Amino acid sequence: MKILGLSAFYHDSASALIVDGQVIAAAQEERFSRKKFDAGFPTQSIKYCLQQGNLNLSNLDEIVYYEKPFLSFERLLSSIVSTAPHSLLTFLSAMPIWMREKLDTRSHLTKILKRDFPEEILPPLSFSQHHLSHAAAAFYPSPFESSAILCLDGVGEWACTSGWQGQGNNIESLWEMSFPHSLGLLYSAFTTFCGFKVNSGEYKLMGLAPYGEPCFVDVILRELIDLKIDGSFRLNTKYFPFVSSLRMTNQNFAHLFGINPREPESALPQIYKNLAASIQKVTEEIMLRLAKTLKKQTGSENLCLGGGVALNCVANGVIAREKIFKNIWVQPAAGDAGSALGAAFASYHLHHKAKRAIQPPDKMRGSFLGPRYDKKSIHDFLQSVDAKFSELEKSEILSQTCQDLKDQKIVGWFQGSMEYGPRALGARSILGDPRHPDMQSRMNLKIKFRESFRPFAPIILDERCEEIFKDAFHNPYMLFVTHIKDQYRNSFPAITHLDGSARIQTVTQKENPFLHELLARFEKETGCPLLVNTSFNVRGEPIVCSPEDALRCFIQTDIDSLVIENFYLRKQDQTFSRSDKRWSVKLELD
Image 1: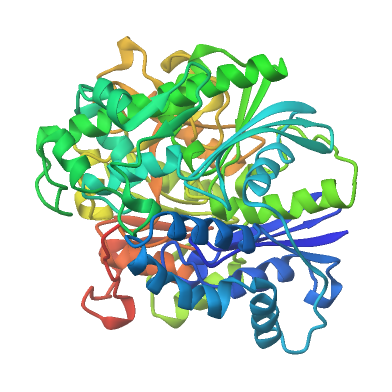
Image 2: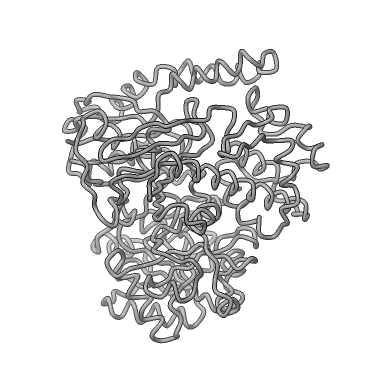
């Protein structure tokens, strides 16, 4: 059975193809369109997935959309009516697009598919539910026969937080918390108040938190949120106008903390760092209580996490350290992009009653589910733009890259299939030596063009992780934060955050053999078994997808050398000019 899952029209549009329960391909539209968090219809992503499966739309058994828009419309209309007349502007701005596109999503999707695939016979189109798609994406690819499932995000149709139990090919809903009582929206409210963008700045807020003191935790728990012992909660909507307007916070919120919202790109006074630390601590406490509740309800040794809040790797690390569950698995594309995959799995196992086969370590194939490029196409492209490059053997690539890293050079690393989800996991990465004290600032200011407080993650040989990090375990998707052991605290300044934490990614020979070999060689030559790893992109831009994207980023930044498969380029050899419009990069606020 061949099923295509879709997410679109809100943010992080994506598509995913499964055939007989196996993940064939998955990708976000942003990687092709080069528009970060692209909400448009994922035509290019669909074409890629079909190509990978050697299929046409006509060959598919079903297309599944990741939510039920009519229920979202019901929630929007209910909110508008309950808060009238304050919601008039929301009504006037939202209704035209709902009436034109979203209310009858079936017709809208059919129209676009017929436009973009005019020669195809469309398969049946069905609809999942938003949190069911998150739960399915979290459970079905996991390595567990049975598991508790916790999904947390901004809002789906109505659900904002939900608990589930997965067993075999079945998922059962246990409970949900509904709009407007949302942990995701609460965290986003603080994100925008601190001067960052919703749906992208949450990572910044998490990275900023260690610079502050959680001195507002009591205020948040007393005034903003009524938190129960089981993790359930209600927001005080006096402070959150998003029920009736397009704003996340209001003057009541500002008066509570005695400051105005921070202007984007302005200085960061200590109070905003304290706000970041406080809401991060509250988020950790809520997730911890919810995890304990699910443990009591299910008795399971396993926990699966999904939804955008599950990308809060600091909170995930807190849950892991508490050892509530023996095993935790987080969907690497936990946000709405991953819901495309979840929608396909939900239909396959729940609607079509297909049996489920467990596939260690999981079914995500390292999350390397996007496009890859063959040597001939790369060679022809580099030659066509007059790039200066060397074609090397595998051993020579490893030797040259190691030497560059030892020389404190920064390397663009482009290998194999692109990652699905927000993390660069060694396919589209920028690498550096973690021992050098100014590597973090160099990467932030000269490569990524982003704030200096943003931390970088280490990639480390799986077999060496427990030696260097506390409470370490196999973590291939960079979704848990742990702490470096005291004796290594000053050894790797480029990957150690202010509080000694690090968002680690473990690399095994089986899951990523070439990257593992690079790490092993670097350790052999330096004694250091880890590297700095950050996503191959500049601020405001999606992670690179194609060799052309990689070359553009290479030209426009201070990356010293570029490795694309077995092709090696040095910056000093190139004749390109950063001012050449062919290679321009539009730096947008993120």
